[in-house]
Image (cartoon, rainbow, N blue to C red; front, side, top):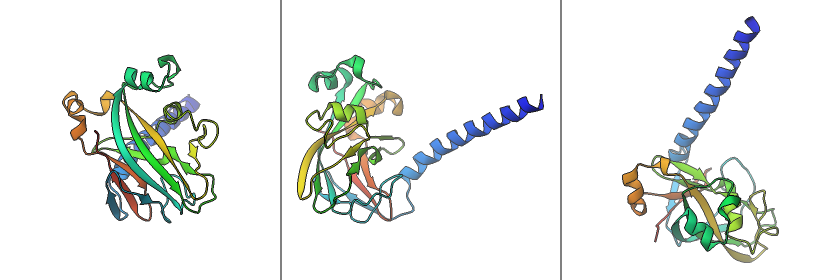
Length: 203
């Protein structure tokens, strides 16, 4: 009986930790203690010596420019990129596609971790959907874009890539979904020592 009680308490502590981390993670992604610098869609944003979420990879020499943003329903996304709905690991009803340019001036590293790019709203957040990003960029699949979510650009080159974020209706109320293009949305590129945010404008 004592072992059962100890095991139950242990499970409750694990569940509490998961819930605590999830709730506070969203809070930390929105409210930063670090200086925040804002950029607009169309701006070229160097990584510099800043780091991304959960990684200290050296990205100095890389830069990111979000060129445009488009919201697609699930069927429209599948048709546009020739993807079978059955092949989608998570079938999000909506996808936000950020057509972006990534440049590499002088960095020989293994590339940018796309899963460390965070899409933010005032009260919601989400990571780049790697499987769907690969589906939307078949010209890079298996080479510079890998299943490990790393995107590498050769030295002194630039490449255009479509970053895909799966969105679930439960993130917002029905009224806010109807006016989604009016939502305040940004892409968190780096978090420390400077948090760089790129405002997203949906066309």
